[in-house]
Length: 252
Image 1: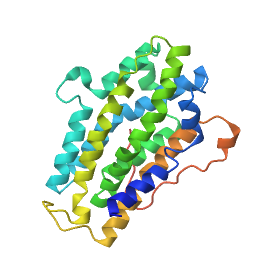
Image 2: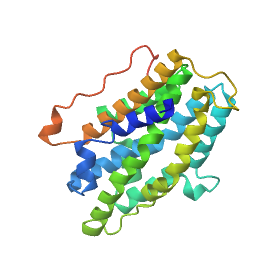
Image 3: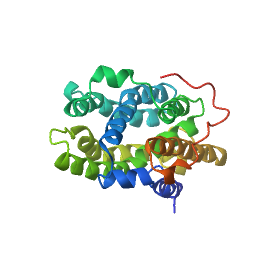
Image 4: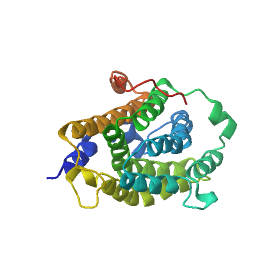
């Protein structure tokens, strides 16, 4: 099994996509209050992710990696179509639920949401290229499983309580994720010494940093979901701790 396959298996086992909140959401088992909280808190990811990805791009020396990151960023911004800019699609989702955009933008983030956003900013803008790439890898390779939990729950909620819900943002992302995964697979080709890489394969130390980046971003994401979980069984779940030695956190 290659390094890529080992790390991808770690991603698919992680609590970021295997947790009580996503299981409940998948079944549509969330209250109206919980659902609206999800909608507003998740908006922060949609808003800030292009900035976070751009920070990684401008700190990436390897041009082959930068090429693949550019493709993901261009996709986030709509692939040249303004109406398909992902954050705009999410605004349409909020409006369809009767949530005011200004209110969503100015609602203070939950501590777990802020930890997730600022943690990603720190990881992606880190001068440690392997760690930043690992964080990007972790995020892209958990995404299909995440959407496959969210979309069935949203479908149930639309059928039972929110008939006007616009799900385009979520369905569109699910359709794109295979392309994003392939882009990340190409981006880490240098790890296993694939031909065409613009620098030597990663060292053992760089591979360790890559794994740290993967697990750090997934720990932050798991914390995000547990921050939305209201049920007693989840209240005792530990929150991810800030990663040490990566510089000052950026402010969202």
